[in-house]
Length: 203
Image (cartoon, rainbow, N blue to C red; front, side, top):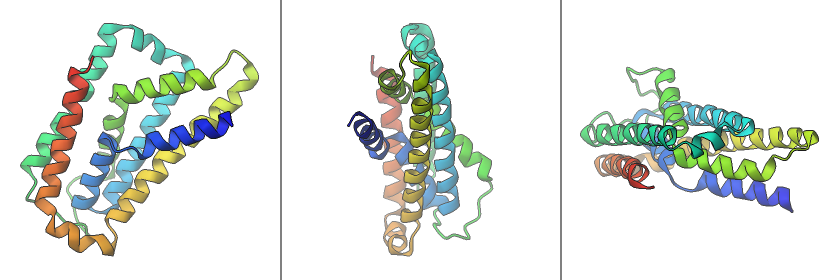
């Protein structure tokens, strides 16, 4: 039951709308399925970082160091606000969810966007600190279970956000999204700015 509970908790955290979801949404509807999927992969790579320092106990040290934690929080907030402002400014342009849509930016650009959006989010850091404090124990035999749970979380993020990208770029949604282009971009931008501001002011 404990394993199922942790698995379900991980699922709830992943599917809860947040900055990652907004970024995947924005990139998918504006630049196509591949951009959304690469963003999802970037997010899942960031999860590897969270899991690594959680297992090493570094996240606990960061959360106890006010200066270092503030640096992470404000850097993450600034990046989300930057993405949001950029999205609002370009809300009426560059909207093409066609699979053949062209962009000056390559796959690495979206990988980095997804990676930074997630890895600089202190809420994600604290989530992994709390969840792995329940999974990790002094028992050396427990390490395999911890590793498997970490792999589960990585896979969960990659699959969920890739499915979001695929769904949003499907034929069923294309016509509706085209009509909602400008407002959707503005909403995504406002959402990212809001997430960034909340992270900056929340103690």
